[in-house]
Length: 369
Ligand code: G6P
Image (cartoon, rainbow, N blue to C red; front, side, top):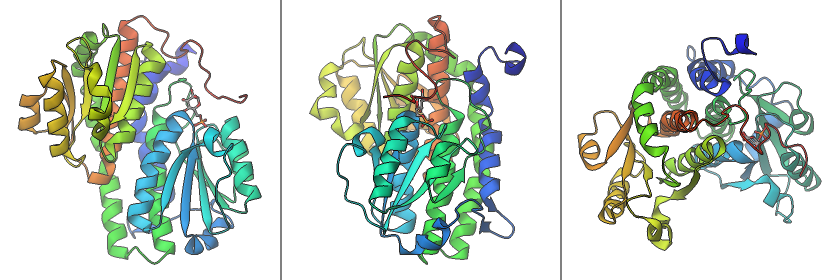
């Protein structure tokens, strides 16, 4: 096992650092830049039915649900059809309204999560078309779904998922483009622009990874906290949820991810000097709205660490500390912004002496309810 970790002390850190390659492999297994084109070899019978889809429901659990929440926004924006993201364990026990013009996209690293499989059974009963975004060849979700989109993250061993989040987001981005194309809503020129944006992403992620020393300094100050609030808006909301999940999974610090617009409806009551907030306020994540949230927190004595776009002098001056990410296209900010949060959770956990790769009470794959 030590040999498998190479130069890294933990699988989680190794897998965080594998992201530039995993993201590039995922993009270029589904698309080419020259000529700009999408290739979905495993969509099977789903490929021809995408044009008739009128609605999309994305389901998943844990980190995969957070990726699904990002994917939901891509599908609405690119394909112009209603899309919802739902927790698979809630979905399976409702009577969801579905028909053969509904596409259910399940997101699952393992393809074996029990709630996801049961939710897929419900969807099948209702006659919905199903595509699964999965990282494991031949897994159960790929057998049940009409088609599969594979992420190319390679084996993920850390219980806290990292590279499977970012690769699932990228796969969902491309799938949303594929649905848009099937519905006649994507010109070749638009596709080319999207693919150019995606092509920049692995380098941007590598750049964030180089800031690990800065993140470590932040981690030392957060490691003593009992609670941490993560805030974001728009595409950064699922990132806030994921940042909070990572921190609680590996460091056992209580963390909550919230849509920043909800602050005044409860969470702001918690703010005091010993309650730190991590605010995701990158360029396109409703930044000016986030600035006012940050000011409101600071007015109550709460310390704020901002995740901001490189060169943002205003936010750097405003926040008590910042972690920066390079400028990427608006749609790809969730991928860039989650990287410092993954590193932060890792460093806090290490600082607190936690077993990062095998957190207590957690399993990599939940196959029983
Ligand atoms: C467990 C893992 C998480 C994962 C979730 C869903 O809770 O600890 O890291 O996100 O299951 O797993 P899946 O394989 O369906 O993506």
